[in-house]
Length: 601
Ligand code: SRM
Ligand code: SF4
Image (tube, rainbow, N blue to C red; front, side):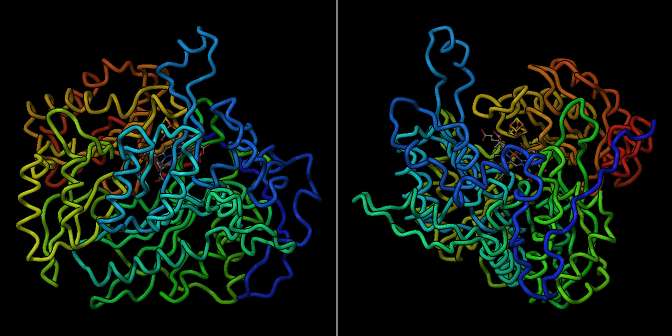
């Protein structure tokens, strides 16, 4: 069956006369003046917001409701904040004629996923003081707090900033947290690559002072910025910011733990003789789609070219400005960079970027990825420091009666002399442990039962679930609260097949938005309705190929049985080293996926 996804025409550039190589400024004639009628409602909210201010200050002061004005809830995303309500009690509260149990999710940006022990301690304290007592490590190397009520919002944001972290641009139509491979093996390369990730993140951070005005005043009534500069501007984004969210990552082969092909913009470090000589640049990956709408699809990033290390920030800026000027601002389901690249074609997209750079990108260099998971356990680097990767199930750091992990990590942070690194698989690395400190850390790991965090089946160690219920407003089904049980059922089959130590990637999301990147897991599960999931098979082990739909609306309690014959066939008939996703295709269980545009075919 041919794909029904039809190419659409992209809008014309807004400022073609800018000189190459210079900052490609937003059009002096904003888009809303030319085609206001066609713009999505969010565009009008952005334009009217006065650089993301809206009526947020008034909304925060209004204690008659736990919510903010609806238009402001779009703006808070740019400040790293989502209004949510507890969906477990939604129906009951409606019956009692109470407003939903509103609270806020706060996403803390951690460029490259690296934070200090003191910052860990600060986040840990905030989780107890203002949130639901848990820290959520996300699939994009960030911290999330859930359950912060409106009256605590400002204090929480202020204290996050006092910890020298922030939340601006953690969400919203801007470049978000820049991810970076947390590589504990090659510490010098990591330092260099992390520097690039941080430089891109800094360069693409919105310049508006609204964040400081709203969240960081000192409580005396004096705002940090009382007189607004009349020429305040966003030199890269303009007053309308981007058409949609924008995501950037940096990978260091052979690890593709950041899942580079799932992101708008990617940099693959090319390392020669222990030095980064440049980056292969990828564009146009993204996973979100909508059930029943074949115009929407997950897509993998394409290769744009190769750039020198010193040019990476400029390349990032130019890609962002092409998306700013060509991205679709009328339909948010068609506004991600992946659709801009597909509509223009990768060659035309490259031309546009190169026109703005004023030079041509070089031919991409060879590289090889081996996997997209984490490598658990201790590893020692060339400097003699040690790094321990821990498995944190679905990224949720909490204490339970038999596993006081959060307390243990807090005690470790008190004595740790290195850093912490959040991985893109929701795990945690206790990094740069000095030789003199390792014994002490090992004692604490043993005391709190954390030393064995990765003593699990290879399937569980390669599992990942998004948050979903009860906090995510878009969830159609359980995910974080269900995947551990389903993995338990599949583990029994793997034991029987003798495969419990064979890595197979499995990821689940509560809806098709793809927050745990399920379409590039060898077993992908995507919520359809409460307790039903679409099952996808055939994705590549290192995130290089999308899966395909194997079963629409599979009932939760039938999924393990559905997988059973395929797993047993894999155990009996795989070739040496053959991955589960590859086998599913070779053995005819599923068709190979070749392009996101044919995802539904
Ligand atoms: Fe996501 C929206 C959670 C990574 C694609 N995502 C949401 C929201 C904010 C729901 C909402 O809009 O109301 C979820 C909040 C749930 C909650 O209660 O915390 C949410 N996304 C997450 C996190 C926390 C999942 C996790 O369990 O770790 C991840 C936070 C990452 C971060 O730190 O920034 C998260 N989201 C992703 C990823 C994976 C990635 O980027 O590597 C994707 C797929 C890649 C992509 O962007 O294409 C992803 N999230 C989405 C989408 C679909 C976007 C699209 O193109 O259609 C939405 C909905 C939207 O934007 O309209 C969404
Ligand atoms: Fe929510 Fe859907 Fe993202 Fe899961 S995939 S966190 S259900 S938006």
